[in-house]
Length: 110
Image (tube, helix red, strand yellow):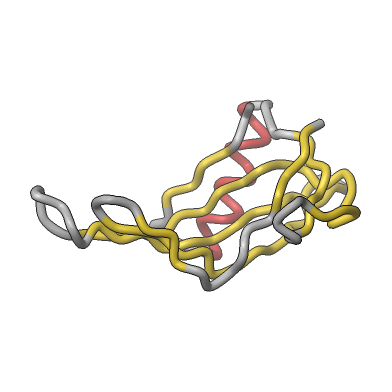
């Protein structure tokens, strides 16, 4: 299990070459459990190599407890069980790809 600090939706996070914005935070029912996933858009708009962007989905894992406490920042914290089984990741990725085609899908296995 691990603690997952939720991020603020709609807030742009900038870096030297671009930035990203989280636009959705959802839960997906899968095998009698709930999977937390976060959808964002990223753009490279200040790079020597050109511009570009993508939609991405980060999958922290299965929800164990939902927003039961708050971080020092005031944002909620949930308890998450990372999804480490390759077959489960593949099935979840297929489900998400149907809803969000052509997205980069990342599982947090730390």
